[in-house]
Each structure stands twice: as C-alpha cells, then as structure tokens.
Image 1 (cartoon, rainbow, N blue to C red):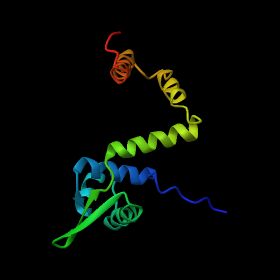
Image 2: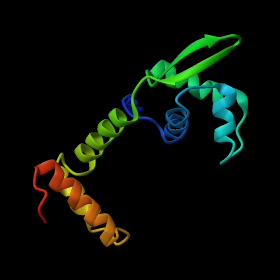
Image 3: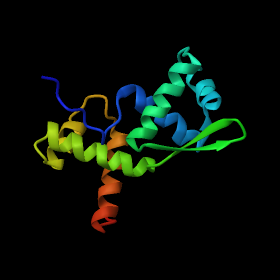
Length: 131
C-alpha cells in the first residue's frame, strides 16, 4: 500500500520552484520558467503543471493578469523554514533540537567563523551578549 503524501512539505522539485517564486516575489509561468531554465532546461507545460499542483496544495496563490496567471507565495519563506526544521527535528532527531544542532556543529565543513556566528545568534537569543 502506498504511503499518504505529506502535503505540509514540498518535494525537491517543488522546493526548487518555490525558491524561485520567493526570490521573484511573484511571477507568471514564463517568468518562473526563465529563472528555472538558468539551471536546467524545462518545458513550459511541465512548469505550469507543477505550479498548479503547488497552488492546489496551498503553497501558491494565483491571479489572472491579462492573459497570464501570476503566482505568489501563499506561505512566507521563514514560515516554511520553521515547519521544515520542526519536521526534520521530529523525524530524524527524535524531536530533540539539541541533537540536530550537535550534528550540525560536528560537521567538518562548518568553519570557525560559522560557529562564531551561531554562538552570537544563541547569545542574542539567550540575552547574553558577553562571550
């Protein structure tokens, strides 16, 4: 039996499309296609179909302007980031944000500058500006 799809998260392709719409603020299928085609060639009809599905899922809204549909994000990027991180923390790190952060800071690709930036963010959040 097929597992029911979670409509609260975007697929990899949808996330690529959504990132373009967030960056543009709004756009017609042609506008979005032009941006997507900078990375990988896509067909107009394929892009239109994915955008329509994303609208049906509630990630985009559309409005007819002249003869084109103009798509806008229905969800702010920061809200989606928050939902996505909560989902990742819940499913992969047993709902323990500290485990997620521990794994992140143990990554060999994290530079000392990145760690200092994280420390500053934590200090700001905790109200402790002294190091």
